[in-house]
Amino acid sequence: MTKIEHIGIAVHNLQDSNLLFEKLFGSPAYKQEEVPSEGVKTSFFMNGPNKIELLEATTSDSPIAKFLEKKGEGIHHIAFDVEDIHSEIERLQNEGFKLINEVPKKGADNKLVVFLHPKTTNGVLIELCQDLQ
Image 1 (cartoon, rainbow, N blue to C red):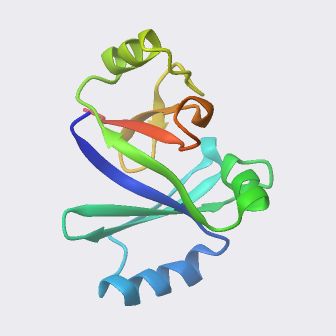
Image 2 (image 1 turned 60 degrees about the vertical axis):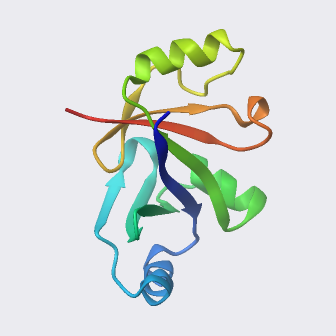
């Protein structure tokens, strides 16, 4: 893992939260997109070298909808940049970590992603991200 790629924050209303974070950071989101396979709409903000991803559920059975129902708005995950997602998956599985999805899939912001199960990471959902070529 080379750096924190972004911090994901689950929100009930993306439009309202975009306005809030625009005020907080003094600039608008640089990217918004929908990821239908995950049932989510996202906005990305830059703050210096750091990225924040806001996530709103688009379906009632999506992981974000379930998270919001159980825990409410707040930090959902921390994403780490990796150079070779397949070797990182193998390394982490050999270290005893469990993955939610063992096969990388296309995520937001032109990334290939996998998630580590929070039961094996002290309750924190960890996302591994690799830039798609």
